[in-house]
Length: 456
Image (cartoon, rainbow, N blue to C red; front, side, top):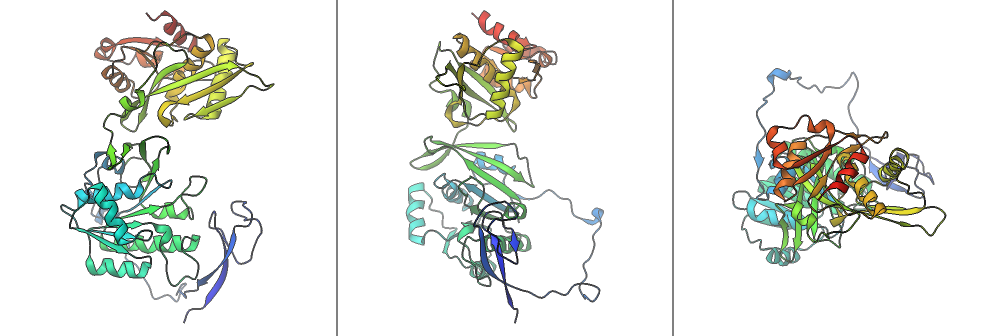
């Protein structure tokens, strides 16, 4: 019978130690080392081992394209790379109440037309799931509900019933009975995920796992959890806004640059086919400090309104605040505007807000942010038909960005007929793109703001 040993495991980072520490050596957090009893399993290793494995040559391996299962949600499939890959392990994480369980239950309605699904819930009873499915309009007969937290029982149920798709909600409620620690601990989460990974690979069944987040917004549990799974999806969005953004941060079967946009309604999550219209709704006219950016989210161009506010400060040190834009990037842009362009912000507070809660992390939004700040500082409005994008260097120059023609096409489609773009992008534009709108090439920020002032 295997003996158990005592380990001290950090609840934040998963660092393991044979003795207790007040401060975790791995992450530096205090009072996070918890004692856990772990079964010691003997293994045959070394020269006396009788195990061997067959080594396969690369040319012998079947390189056929993986089979994908469509979910019925174009936005969800886009983020996954075209659908759910058979035998894959997908982790879906996000803040409480953001819509993780909702979207998984909604896609069951479409998947149930051709696939058998097992929905394992460790947080809700079967009757609660029935009530929620009625509200969401999910009534497929191929959806099986299992209210269970023991991972051993779940594995046996999957092997017996052989469903086509398994959903685990959530991994933090699963328990492996051979480990004495409580549900949600680092060891339990890691071991249960390992068991699900072997189950998915051995049976070729895709498993979708819901994961909780901690107070910092990271996935709760050890970092190894994200290494085990094939795909990591994050649900983002502010609770005060109705829309949600599904983003892929790891995908072994597709791109990690794609996003899906959803709107939360009373009947569940609805796809937003044109997110740019959503971001620009209610935009003010003839007001200084607002400009529109066009950023690329994977293969999709999205237009977003950037608002800047510059006002005289009442403190010795001016205040800087950002919502939806990197604070350090904003500080750098203000320094460039002061040093290279002569716009003085030293006695003024500066605020940046990306309307709708969208987060802009692409350098192409630099020019838009700079124009919004200068527009507010000079109290000169940027015309409603102008869009601007470009990366700003420390010398004040505007550097080229990728997918320029695609950005212009999206802007023209939404009614913008004047585009301020980097000079080096202008030289590579096709003739049709140059004729589609009034394209203004700018070498530096002064050129860009001059174009704003000269606009009719």
